[in-house]
Length: 350
Image (cartoon, rainbow, N blue to C red; front, side, top):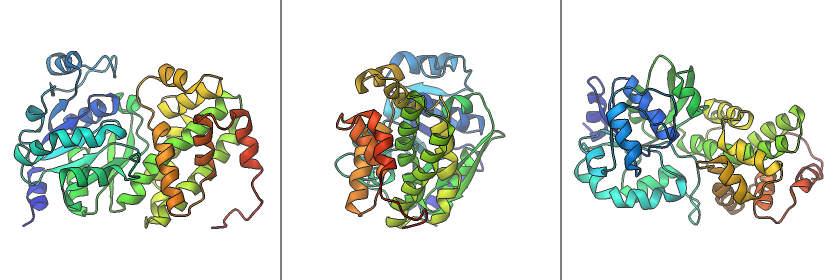
């Protein structure tokens, strides 16, 4: 019996889960897990936030007004990880490597044997162009069967309000995907499983970049035609890159693909959409980041995604345009004209 199979068996009881990252998404997913019956410990760096989570079950900094179910909060990673059979990682993608390196020994020494590590992160690492599950597996020296990712149309404020939504749990191991899905299944949160880790992760990373473009368009006063164009052509870009990397085409029309893309591009609750809107209204990137608050993963991931696309000879004009605008090399007023002036071709070419 494999370690993962042994761990799957514990779901029939009450699995212990460590959630690393006490921001809005980390706290929200911790809430889902606790509502599903798991024993949850939330780890973060802000002592005041974690003390409130532990004592009053509230995180007013990131989820104001939300009453959380009973869970523990701590700034001590050893306390969070001790005995955990599932470890959820919800930190900014560009600091994931450093964060996990500092906890590697604890994952192996104090977490439960065969513990599964789950990514909520949606980005591609700068410098290596690696997806987050690749970073986790590499740093923590884990086999594919102990790594998973959760992604879908999952805006944290709506989940925290316990509004109905679905998501995708992807792992190369179906048993691992089922383990995580069982741990986070509630009356309002419906997980589906998938073994296409590459496709699910790329959807989560690239949709943030398309959402930046959608926000820029809205900030300029452009309407629904433009938004629909960006969403549909953005999905083409995501699909091109995914297929080049061996993903399953069916993933892109599902919850992690079109579902998450629609939610992130259209909702003002999306940080990437809000940041893009601020830029579209004339703020500098620095001003837009400050006005948005929190992490908008698409800003930094846009560069690494474009590097990944170019390395595989994949054309991604919207992504390239966003990179140029954010870098100050292309005036925002010229972005639409640049995209529309591209050579005419069949819609389904490539």
